[in-house]
Length: 334
Ligand SMILES: [Zn+2]
Ligand SMILES: [Zn+2]
Image (cartoon, rainbow, N blue to C red; front, side, top):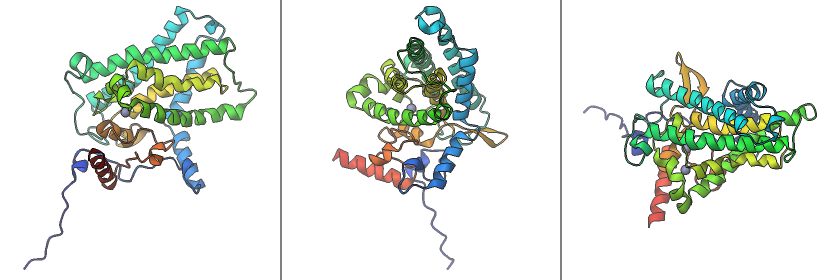
């Protein structure tokens, strides 16, 4: 008799749904893990702030915007159509470059083929659930018509308030360390705020009224990230109102809102990393939020502030975690 061939286990349904999954379980920020692991914290921060990545790019962009593309505070003292319209056009162009550029390279030109693409499905969905019966047109419309409007409105409100002394202003010359630290803290606040706003949006009446629009996309692309209902834009971008209390420089305001809008495009890119000649050049989407779009009831927050872990809604991208979710769902239905 021949030896028994080792049994190869059939891929689970969860595994079949994904073309690419990270090899390791998804990790959340070690900043909130006890006991504190200093080495992990340093590595986590270094990987986000001391490499060429979205944080560094958006800080650079915010600085450039402030010096070259933003009306000075003297001008923003009066609410006038002219300077607000210029900011609207600038933000419109920025999101078109980021979301449009990524969509073109990754999903039209397919610059890296299927490499590091989470969902095997193509981004060509059509159907009545979308505005204009087409996913891409739907996503572009809500991003530009509602998203850029609220982004600009919050920016104009904050800079008008600052110019008139209604909100406190932080100066580089007086508090240089705090000035730098505030970029890092902004991301933590954004993550903290996002979880709670997002949980609220999953409350059935709010889901039906507003959030269902963002969840039309079970397979996501760069234009899906900032494609939201106006009510969701109003809530999602309200994180910047923290600067009514916490003093900031206009650069922090611009950074905060650019980060919210532009990294929504990168985080929904559908790919984990942007490859150039097969080398990973820029971290993009994460499997964590990609699963939220597919399964709805997991991963409401992001990885910076791990509320999901605390409230039992964290899916770490493994088979075991998925089984756990399915059994929880079955229990809820009983
Ligand atoms: Zn959601
Ligand atoms: Zn999303």
